[in-house]
Image (cartoon, rainbow over all chains, first blue to last red):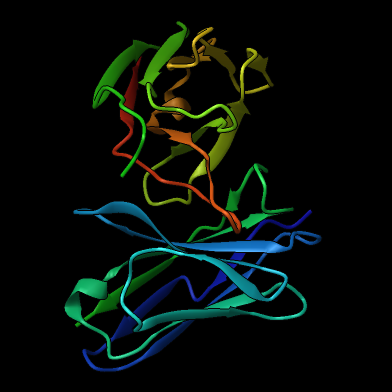
Length: 113
Length: 112
């Protein structure tokens, strides 16, 4: 069974640009969550999608958005990139959305210059 | 904010049991305790979770106190590959969906 796939693995962008990251969950999983990891703030929850609906949102500005497709694949978008957006972005896949274990991908390392 | 408190770091000798403590004194009755670990620059890996009873799987054992205010993750025979940051998480059940609130975790160093 394939794990959670995140693409791309590495990305370099310039301030002011926008970026789209992709996450393919484990087959059969319907919940996808996104997290940001930085040295200063640690792992922080961005948002969770289940059945194409955003179920929960963390405390991030509106520049961070996401969506989920009918096949459960998810994308997150960051617009007007800032230097502080440099981070490891992690996607987690769960079968349901009520106390089921989450399986993480390897992440996308975003560097904003 | 994370609802758990963990020591910042611990050392363990290879082949010995690693016992990682976690305090979660404000845990609610329907909240589970989850453990994840993260090896450098990789995504977190699920280890185990529990509600009230002790749990065991092929990776570890989870001991939860009767009052549920604390728990201990036990790696029975630690190896060098177990060196990682270990996160104890109380699974927050929101009205819609769930999220994981990570604290700083415990850096476990397994030494030969």
